[in-house]
Length: 70
Image 1: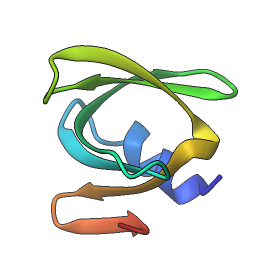
Image 2 (image 1 turned 45 degrees about the vertical axis):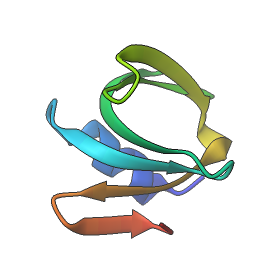
Image 3 (image 1 turned 60 degrees about the vertical axis):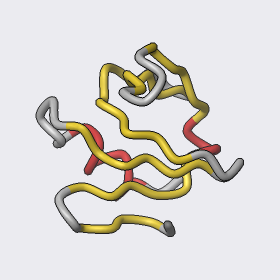
Image 4 (image 1 turned 90 degrees about the vertical axis):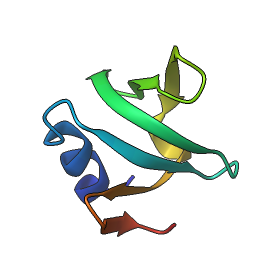
């Protein structure tokens, strides 16, 4: 897991960002909380909370800055 990706999500300060998964999903997400293996985000597209394994995250796009692969 890319630590820069998680650090960027943590430091998003409640802002929405683009979240890319290895399964090919793209979300407009807001960071909520994390555990040792999972990250919880609010999916603005579907208006619901989602839980992802940290290993399934591929990239983040915050304020035109891309972290990881998009």
